[in-house]
Length: 425
Image 1 (cartoon, rainbow, N blue to C red):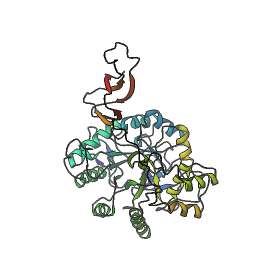
Image 2: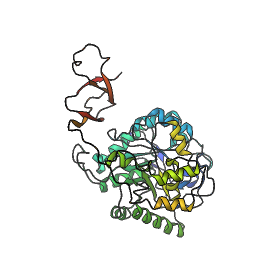
Image 3: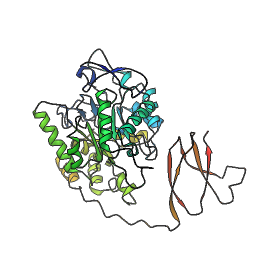
Image 4: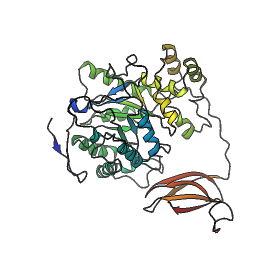
């Protein structure tokens, strides 16, 4: 396929590949993966000690277990994950949602894991150090021109001339998540992503939080989504969307086609949605008796059981962790084999979370949000009563930081609390 010059998305003019990369260049055989024998489903038998893989519609093969990087995952955590064998990292542009895209980029750069560090190669066995990085654009940047600008930001933060995957983080704004109405809709953003895909600036495009109606609209677009990312865990299995994607992929397989195939990714697969957003006082997935029993039977952990169950069902998972031991444990979820009885027992949990215990509400408790309006990093401190004008800062308690312009820090606090802001460093 003929190379073409990049349009004016960024200043450096490079020659990259057009809509579908050449198979001999794009095919990635990663050290932490075993090649799936079925293009629609992970291989359950070829190597139980390795994560299964999925070959995307652009002919790039990726592992079905990646590192999520919300929840404060930063440079050292990404670096240790890469050293442990991770070859896929999921990030996003939104600092307020716990992502540090620029720190992911720095870690991958320092580990020489970028696309341009490994491709093109003289044969179809590229270096095993390639790390596939996926980022996501905040809904405040919906709109054609806003999305083009957002792509430029990710290119700079990830220190790369091209991007492995870009998803629209949410198809619309709601509540107060967008500081002002976006310039356009997800349709306009998709036009920008299609153009970036055509020019080789982005190799995979997709969107999060997709229902059947949105999936139908996406399949009417000139460039179909490479990746769909939805909330998925044992109590919320999203079966209708998954079944539709499965049927699409199976039909394409019968026709001998790869273009148009869709990877289904699950976020919050270990139950964090219930704990952080659904009012639960503890994580119902990690504390479920059925999952605990299955884990004990196999000498495994509950996360390992959920990860294997998910990938066996064709779902890529992205557990976030700042712990090296947890990262390695999650990646090593294939030393045992769930039985068909185990699989059915987990399948039967769908739609049946335990009742949510009501949290006691302290009338003095408040949720606060600080926004960094300065072009420099800021440290935030809680100041005890009577200590605001004290020359000594030893009693000030560091509660968080905001690394750059527009960064947001959200805290649970109480009426009457005082906070102090200082330039970091």
